[in-house]
Each structure stands twice: as structure tokens, then as C-alpha cells.
Length: 425
Image (tube, rainbow, N blue to C red; front, top):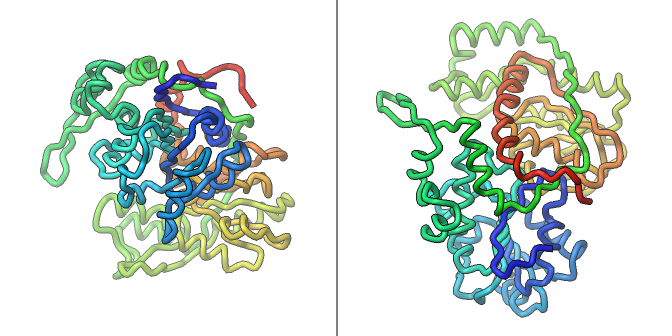
């Protein structure tokens, strides 16, 4: 157990390896613990705190938040969990000096200029002990890690003394470790910073002393299996028309390059949103392929990941399909397809691994971090069956998978000096 009087550490354990329990073990002797986390994760803390400790947990939310705060402050060992959004409502003066702060999913405060980061920095500045927890420390690039170091040591002088002069500011960090390039946006030149693998390794070695030895997940993620999904003639015609004209109908078009990329992914699902946000559907080959594959291979329960609401709704018209969050609350034997969205279910949804082991991506997220976070919904503690991982095989998904695999390296480099060989239970 970590016993430093003024501990300030990272927990960068992989998704599904038990970060919550580990944090509760580390802070077992602390009287008051404040947890700042995404709103969807609060219930995880309320559930797991009594499961793994003798601490009493309260949620700072809703009309009872004042009473919950008072209860946490007067409890023998209290834990108060609040969302990042609720930090705007919180009066720090109500907290005693010497509390312990846990920042869960700390990549949420990677942007030093955001109000969210500035508010969390104020909590950290007042706290006696601080733990920052995330399974994806460099979700986008190396600057994400700098932003979290800013939370760990909110005072500039402390940060410089601890990490060195390049951590004095984001500008200093970029100049020390980044490579600039000019990017033209609407005729305006902007500087874009990129970070080489060697720089990621250097920064990793600097923060290594502030990272508790990394625990890897008890389970290895399976290799993806691709499900063939031949396009119908109508879908091929729609894709060809879009490629030729960047327009499907008078009210289904793209006004920018980023919108065009989104439209392409929608078309791959067999629909597009018009300018009013209504889905214009012309195919369902991907959904059909998944349904046929599950039946052909006798998959009793399959977690189906959909990026778009329209795709999820198409699945949910079936009597044997159910939304994942609802299924978790009330499982049904007659449900085969459990539909989830990796953007809203990336964190805070635990328990599905006890109900199923097979998952399939209709669409893929754009980053390795989001992909691994989604997979970890089922490949995590409590999973007793052999996990299965499937991806619908289309040209769009193949290209996105190349992007995911290409971006994966940064997180691996960041963790390399920090990983312990022996996995702890």
C-alpha cells in the first residue's frame, strides 16, 4: 500500500483491471475522499465502494447534494463522488484541508485551457493526496499527458521542480518535445504540433516515478474476426452517387470535408441524415450480416456497437434486441442482440461481462483508446467465458481499423517503462 504523506500519483492500469478497487485500497486509511469523475461513473463508485472497503459513499448530485456533502464530511470514512460538471456548483471552502482527491478518467482534464481542468486544478491544489486514474493517458497525443501533469501539480513552481522546466507551460512543453508544422485552415496559417516516439519515451521516463506500477488486465483481448457484409445494389448506387456528387438527395449533402467523412460512415450503415437530422435509409446489409452470423454460429447474446442513433434504432425494432444500459438493469432471456454506443458507454458501464462474452462492431471508433475502452466492457474482471470480437467487413471499417492500429503505438510507448511483468489480482 502506498503510504506517502503527500502522495501525488497516476494509476494508468488498463481498462477492466480494477482501478476502482486499487484506488480504494490505496486510500483505505484516509478519512475523506473526493472523487471527480464522468457522471456515468458515479454509480460505479457508489456500488464498488462498500464492496471493496468499509468506506461510506455519497453522490453529490440532484436536490440532495447538500445533505450528501454534509454526510460525507461527518462520516468516519466518507467518499463523495461528483461529476466534472458539478465541480462548477461546488464551494471548495466547504471542504477541510487534508482530504484525498481521486480524478477518475483523468484524460477528461487533458486540456489545460478548459474550465473543467481549471476547476479540478483548484481541488488538487487544496488536496493533501491526489490520484489520477485513466486507462488512456494519451488518448490523442502527448499533450494529453502534460495536461494531466498540470492537475497532479497545479502550481507552476512545484511542477517545474518535480518534472523539469519543459513542464512549466504548454508552450515550453511543445518546444521541448514537439515538432511544429504549418496547417492552413480557411486561409489562416496555424501551427500543428506532433510528437515522435522518442519524445514519448522521454516523457514516459520523466513521469515514471509518479506512476504506480501498471497492472494489466487479467484477460487478453481476442483478435478481431471480420464478418462479410456484401452491399446491395441500392447501397452501391448510393455510395457511387455520393462519391461522384457529394450529394444523395436535395437535402442530404455535406458542407465540409469533416461532414463528408461523417456522411461516408453513415452511408456505410445504409442511411444518411438530412439537413433536419432525419435519417434517410436505403439499406441494412451490415445489420443483416450480423444477425445471420449470430444465428449461424449459435451466439446466444451479442453486444452490438453502433456509432449512430439511426443504426441502433434499426436494430432495436427487433423483438430480440435491447439497449445495453436497459438490459444491464433488467436482463431478459429472449434478448439476443444488446445494442450499445461506444461514445456514451465508454466508461461507467460494468456488469455486462457477467451476462455475455461476444461483441461486434457495426461501426468502429476513430481512436485506439475508444476501441480498447469499448472492448473492455466485456474483456475485464468477472468475465468467465472466452471473449469473441467481431467487426463488420466493409471498406470504411477496414480503413478505420488501419487508423486505430496506427495510433495505438503512443499509448504503448507511454506505458513501456511503467509496466510490471507480474499481474496482480
